[in-house]
Image (cartoon, rainbow, N blue to C red; front, top):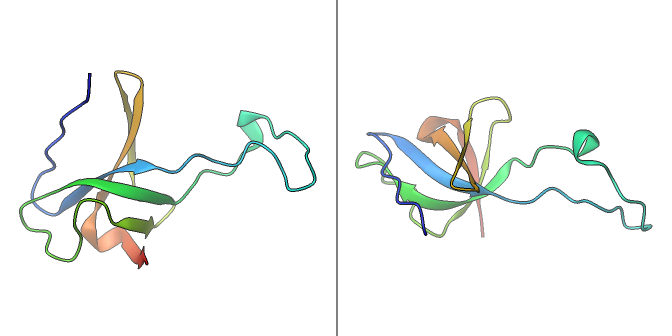
Length: 88
């Protein structure tokens, strides 16, 4: 079942990218040592957000998001002013 989230006002709901689990040289990195990704794909935008749309790939401040896991899916909710850039 797909989760439907509708963010408030100037918030964006995004699905974070997966952290690399293996280095280029082939060494596996345990989950506890992996860097948290700060890039995500936008899946919903609040009604006051005009700069971003569903499907955009964004970069956001590392400690500015709220992380949630709903029905096995991971999401981040970020205030639009904490989004640093859109990746084209």
